[in-house]
Image (cartoon, rainbow, N blue to C red; front, side):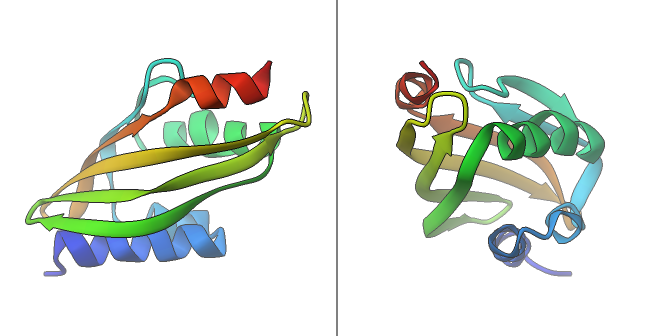
Length: 129
């Protein structure tokens, strides 16, 4: 069985390619995906379909050049932490955003079971105003 670190590394590689199918390939059907309060997609979304609809599609339609740049991965066994940066330009205001972010992943049985995001929501909100 692949390690949690391998699964998350492949998820980020798929994200860089904008390959949503590959990003969701090893995500549990009942994944709990939490975006931080104050973030545009705040809340806990259950299942890959909700993650795609309520996170990826929302961010992709509202922001130009929105993306995550991974700086480092921290291997904690079944928990992996990704540290990096969000960047994008909010379409409605034309304002650019750059915010540091931490993603905490929990992998069990070869599937992502939980995801939680921590970021500076003020910087995101300022770009949206």
